[in-house]
Image (cartoon, rainbow, N blue to C red):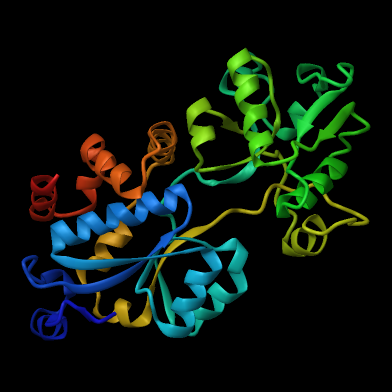
Length: 334
């Protein structure tokens, strides 16, 4: 962080809280991670517009993936902010950095309703209200006939080589799905997985399988997450069995909770003032994020274009994250 609210310390000393800082104060230069997937691009660009137009900041976006941006923040203190840091893949490192004070989680839920798991189309759920959890659905393979063998139910797992492939394979075994009349389908690729969902929805056919949210295809087809109906069986089972190839004794378990944080460096935590308050208040409802991802896919919109669309379309949401004065400045710039 080159410069952020340069007189924050003086104001904090004089008024006792960063919230007392005048909103017309010069914000300065901020660096922010722009994660290289659609929701990460959207979120970073929404932040950029609001911070630049509403708070007078100069925001530099640094493009990268989960591990690269986290590693840079942890080791070098840059970028200052990572808006959509998925935690599960770097859990041990994130916990250590937060515990040791190098990084801080200013928002532990910037997007609601996110996560990985098993899904069915909305019309399938509506037509079978008595089927609620995975434990219920796996008793009805007849609802999901396999193309190769219609006497079997088709469960669509992860493409070969994906990290989630082992998890779905082991869950398939743990829930005794083969014995119940199911076959595990490898969709072959990301495109194949998407195509299987699209084909089923466009034909009104039932579909059960793996996916994650927020994603455009979940939003486009209003896919419904299926609760597993069992408790999470613990990290040892998950990390040392479910996530491995050839686990000898996989236990029934819910999917591990997916967590996303907005994290900042210690320097920014100490000096970011009301910007940290904004980041803490900034929460995208999952349904809204899903709708925006559909917009990005349909219109081939980049993060900046989608951010302006979000700010115009969902004024009732983002204006609750900021003061009236900041909101007026942002609206005037749209």
